[in-house]
Length: 257
Image (cartoon, rainbow, N blue to C red; front, side, top):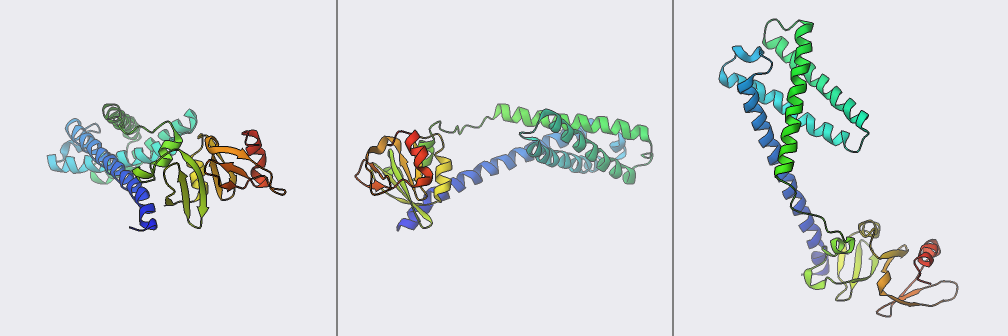
């Protein structure tokens, strides 16, 4: 197996893990949709579907709860990180839009749905359904917590991209075209990644970028020396790592010279 194939293995593994998490999330959504459909088919909150057969009621509520579950996912995504008032406004708008869609459906399917009083009660019932779906989301999240907890150490998370036998304390990272040479105290494998992505992933780790193509671990730096007008730092394996003018203040603040 060549270096390029080896470098791609950690990223392929991460992609597979992400796909499995997404598959589980889709499964949970289908379960919530099914539960909500069965409950609403039995309870019949709107009352208009009482004249329908059991299978027709199920189909009717499958569509309504499908809109509710799908819309709730989108609104939850849009509302994430927003102020409480903005989140509330989004949920109110979603409830109103969903109410209009259900009212239009009932208007064409059933008689007597041209009353404003019915529309007002419909909004209340739709709000109850939306809250019930959110309660199901919360219940599933509470009863099935994510078992994959992120590691507290960003360096440990970054090293998961390397083969197990080549993991060890980081020494430095060098950009080489589209690849990164990740030097540890055990090996120096190549991974397919940009240096900027690596720097972001290592935020909070004991190291810093000292050049547009270099990142060094602070614990690996043993000395520094002035070379002409530049100030290279020397890491543990004797390799000179240049410190560019742009990153010199940060390197000095970190105590590298």
